[in-house]
Length: 206
Length: 254
Image (cartoon, rainbow over all chains, first blue to last red; front, side, top):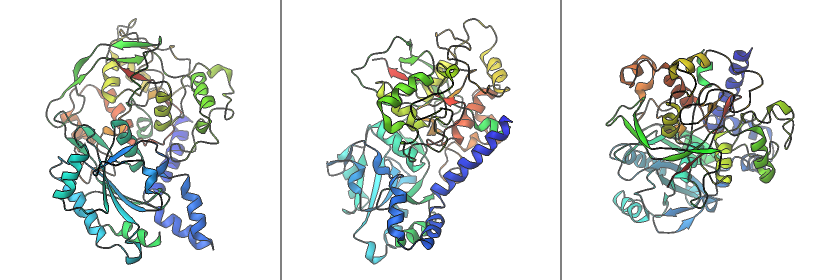
């Protein structure tokens, strides 16, 4: 009996998570087709899933202290990196720049790019500033340093897996997440060089 | 069977309040090192600094105190961001456990976020995977069987419908109870296993943990029990609640 129960439960969980992470587009599209006042309903729906419920403090490349909730109303494109990363992280930045080129004109003022560092120990605001300059990132880009606890919590929400290696570098999965104006996950793509279409098309709907 | 595997696992870590001191229900675990069960790059030796660990898992009664003090973690108020629909589903109500028999049983059906929040509230943190595995390697105090044998014996049986109280299974030589034989436990960095259906196709450093290839780089090929723990951890998400997954807390020792 127990095993059946587990299968049932996991199926539900996976279905839920899958919907949550990957199928948001389809779900919300379906929902909006059914409702006249789609925007309002959508906002109410996603408020409970807002990442802005995270209470931790972060430091930007400009030395500002902020909470994620201060991004409220923006449309953030979020990823996790570390500046000493030789291979994957520059590619992630390139992938996001590719998204940047495809932002619909009416969303240009709302969209921001947020890179959160895994490296609590070494990626201080100065180091992040250096990285931003090196990668030619303008003021639409917010690079964040946080404590180990904050970084771990955020990674759980973004479904990013990572592990610090003995040499101080990080093994990590690669993902790009789009948040809606409430801070809830609207779209997510996994991997390097992945077609950003799910993010770009969702951005148009937000 | 795969589902059963998926339901198993271990510990997570968090920052703690430097002002708090270890409680009477914790023991100090001397630092040390062990050979990593699974590591593909560089040094396989995992070094663990001295730390304090709860001797027993957090119980339903203890967790109820946390919920009473923090009603936003009650079943009807908790945010779906941090828990799934199964959160505390074995309780009778928001502030009521119900079945008196499970007051001192380990709390389960709690997400990683919930376990993490409880730990912070106590001025503690979740143990890291390395800390949990290190403490879990110790032999048993009153049972001469190898640890792996006892673990596999436990894995082979379904959890009892009503979980027994904490402290009811084996104690190890570190004076820590129930590391194997009662529940699976959250660890702070359970998502440090960089693999899985969603990540093996990209940077996935530890793809070798998959299937048979994993056995070639595992430290101890006999340690099937560890495979199961790592497989379970890799299958979890921080919002999940599982009916035999709970937690205990840790604390820095310096």
